[in-house]
Amino acid sequence: MTSLSIAAQNIPTAKVASEPAGWVLTDLTDYFNPSHFWGAFALGMIFLLFGLALSWSLRRALVTLIDHDPKERIDRMTVGFIQHLTTFIMWVILALLFCHAVPSLNKLTTSLLAGVSIVSVVIGFAAQSTLGNLVSGISLVIYKPFRRGDRLQLTTPTGVETGIVEDLSLGYTVLRTFDNRRIVLSNGTIANQVMINLSSVDLRVMLSMTISIGYTSDIDEARAIILELAQAHGDVQEIVGCPVINLGASSVDLSLRAWCPDAATSKSVEYDLLEQIKNRFDQAGIEIPYAYQNVVLSGQFADNEGCADGKTQSPR
Image (tube, rainbow, N blue to C red; front, side, top):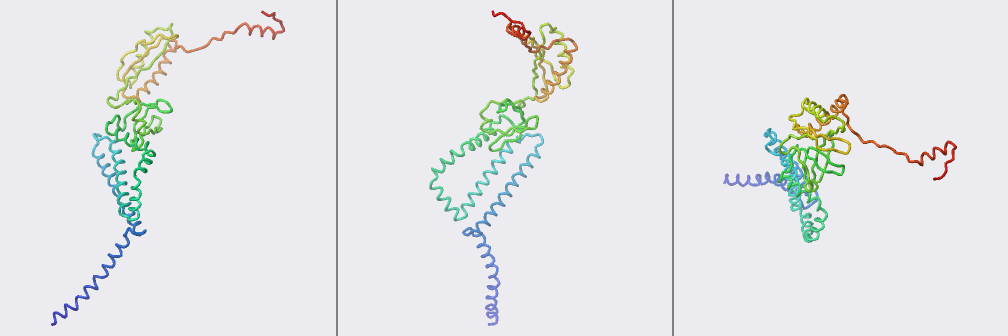
């Protein structure tokens, strides 16, 4: 009897002790219930924090991967594009899961899907350019006509521009010019035009600069000066030759052809040699022809001058 009475007395005590924990669990469940506004808001904050944590983890993983690849066997542009694309897909999936979890948004999504044919046509026309740039970006990553750090030469509204590939995002490609400007081109535009990759295989670039001299100047002396200056330049790796390439209307054109380490260096070499060649030609008396005009005055001007002196002119 004593043991049964003690057990009977202990049963209500255990029940009472478990009731507060149940109430707390029920309150938390009600608080995160997506059926009402604050529950949906709290659930949205959880999805947002989860997405931010995933984005940070993805960035850290890619940074660690790049840090462990000092020889750059992994293409940096491809890694960056994959990061942008993965982040975009992740946020789309999280948004769909949130809409599915919230009853009111789930009903709205269901009603919108009922007219999916009309909506898809409207969205397709509205986002045609955006989707085209996304597909073009994927094709650029797959076929790799250029990599990050390559020097491209292409046609822009301002003319022919040369820039280094800096970034490839989901919609646009960014090039950095030598004067620190940024050329932003849509992926569709850069994928559909002819571009010259100046550094894809071999960085060496052949310098080909034209120097004109007068017909009365000595070709051999001019060629010797040009070759001497080119050989003395520290950035010229190899000289191919300096032949006569054209006999123009007022000049004899010579072409210096020499190998330089890269495209940027070849431009610097060209500017240096042009100035040095001009100074040496002046010292050697070699003419650099230039365009000039001879103005021939007709007889009418002489007639008017005679009238101004007070003399009458008989008509002709």
